[in-house]
Amino acid sequence: MGSAGSYPDGRPPPAPIAIKILIAGGFGAGKTTLVASLTEIRPLRTEEDLSAPSALIDVTDGVESKTTTTVAMDFGRITIRDDLVVYLFGTPGQERFWFMWDELAVGALGAVVLADTRRLADSFPSVDYFEQRGTPFVVAVNCFDGARRFGPEIIRAALNLSLRVPVILCDARERVSCRDVLVTLVEHAIRMVDGTPDALSSAR
Image (cartoon, rainbow, N blue to C red; front, top):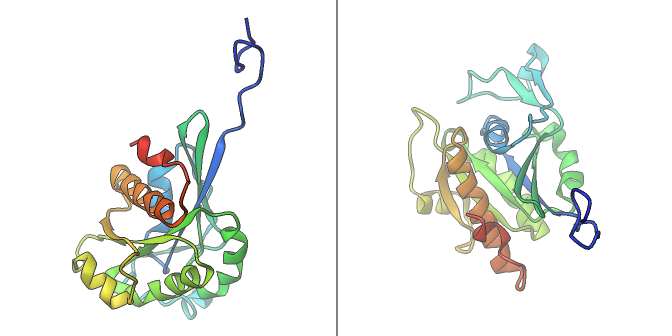
């Protein structure tokens, strides 16, 4: 009989496939909330309180109730199967931390650009970054309470997105809504890279 965690013939199980996904977007768009909604472990957060000096840099128009900011990254994990694990990396939204994006983007399958209709222009840096890198990405519009709602095609036109880039509405507080965002991203990445197994889609 094989030992615990091994095959009947004693061979150890293969190492799980790790999928890395970035969660990007503007300051206050809901990246930390989305990671927390999805992760099965306690999320790693690097949030700091907004100070008076940082208020001069981090413009909070439209998100006046926000009192903290991510200074490095958010991190979470989702186990799809024993042999498939998804790691989520939330990028910092403020311009002074953009130098970290190159490190975080290494090895990523794709990215979610979380958009806030109250500050839609804040999505442009993320969109431009992933377009220039050739990284598959989707735009997920976080539907904040009290914010104006716009259809995906209006958002697509406003951000000047290619027709091939999926645009979907979501609620970063709801796990099912966030899961659908990730599935859409993976399906989009698969269409861009022929021959990649549709692992997440089959796990829906």
